Length: 244
Image 1 (cartoon, rainbow, N blue to C red):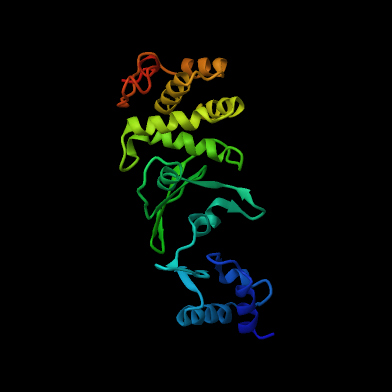
Image 2 (tube, rainbow, N blue to C red):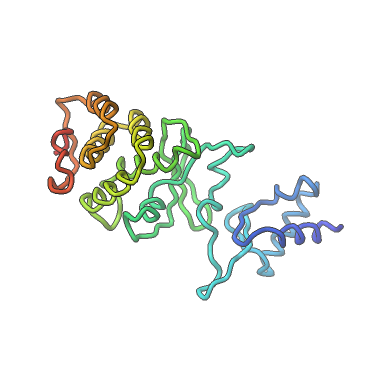
């Protein structure tokens, strides 16, 4: 089979909006330059789209034109190593929208990872990184995302801290006791402001994770206060957790 026929046959079998690179074809076709040239010809003909240098995807059409791939596809090489070991997770602006904290959609993608790196652009998207001190795995990612929301609560666009706390109270209350205990354990590797707000929120919903909540409280310096503008009627326990 000719190189061009092999490439087109393999691409035809890929799902719409799947992001791939020329490397995906080199295990069977050991002709790097030929692969790149043919992929670029397919871009010119409109059969595939180019996301950024060396990255392509099959376009999915809508009434508004070709759709961009979902964010996971855009940054999946930054989230998993070979063998599908988790090294990062999508957080920040994308999660604010997904979890219902804001309706604003951003062209920035933030990634939580243990080893941060400089921000860069990938096509129209700005990719940046925040440090995550906890080990990352598929099970704890939703909890880490919630902790990141708490950590950056004053930076969520197009909303207020009060509205964000209302939403957090709902999401935390929906967690099982085991998940509430786990999120507290994960919080110990976050800053004291995040620990304080998590404690205040869990105390407000009367979490049954009493011993861990007490440990979280004891981890705070009693002479330090945290400037987080929350209404007392929304989080009545805030002052008890040194939040002013």
